Amino acid sequence: MLENKFLEKLKDGDRRYTARAISVIETGDSNSASMMKIIYPYTGSAYRIGITGPPGAGKSTITNQLTKFYRSQNKRVGIIAVDPTSPFTGGALLGDRVRMADIGYDEGVFIRSMATRGSLGGLSKKAVDAADVLDAAGFDIILFETVGVGQSELDIAKAADTTIVVLVPESGDSVQAMKAGLMEIADFFVLNKSDRPGSDQAVVALNTILMMRPHDMHSWMPNIIRSIASENKGIEDIAKEIERHFQYLKDNDKFLKRREEKTKFRVKEIVEERLRAKLWNTENVLSMEASLQQVVLGSLSPYQLADELIISFKNHITQ
Image (cartoon, rainbow, N blue to C red; front, side):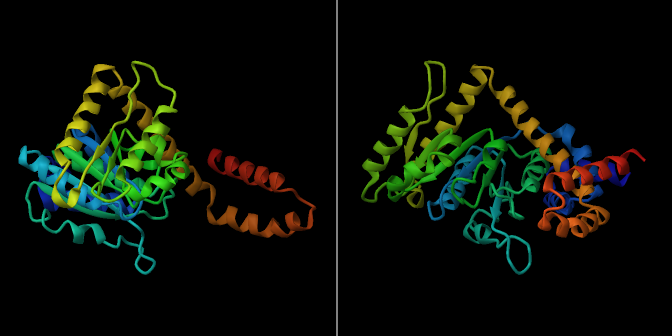
């Protein structure tokens, strides 16, 4: 009965129950898995937008202004601001929540800061689960804003329907170095603070790299949108480009296929995470440590030790 009440309150968009559901998700225990089973049938309606890029590019300001734009269209917006993990508490530093204080009082906006928890891509796996909670709670738009750590910022592309990479004119000199990471995941680019010197050169550098991509007449070519987010300039153009990308995915039967591909990555990660947790139980950790000296001295190879641990794990799960 309590479970039904919780679900109904969540589906009604109750902020308190939404916050409680995300808190349960963050624990990662059996209650978290149970929560996901309950809410998942009610997900799938929200459009998920990832906003990433180097630190200082203005991601929070763009997130803030986009939220205001969607609220003007009476759309409910959920924001997952993924912060670096605090070295003291293990939690999020909450910097983005402070910067978004002016929209935090809007009843149609829900902001949650979450720690990266050491995720190399800068996007906590729990942040994706939290997006499901917001989806089930009836939010129309979900914005992921990530820490922006450079080439390892690839997790965002596995979570969002549309991925925006925010750059600034000063990024022009480093675009070549970025192309192995951020450059590949962008569905389009936003050149923020485009009133600064070097704006035109940055656009030329981006276009040069984009033209080197393999493409044909049916493939999506990322655009470059100029903005000055602090002055609310270019925000409507960003929203229009998001809509254009969404229509492209729908018109070319790629929307559901994209979501299937992202779901495959997600399921793999869940399986690997659970297997890793079971594999590195206390017994196996002690067994490995007891054999390390043999490996160092050369009487046992790392591969032999790994095989022994795997055999031990297999025997354990088949008992």
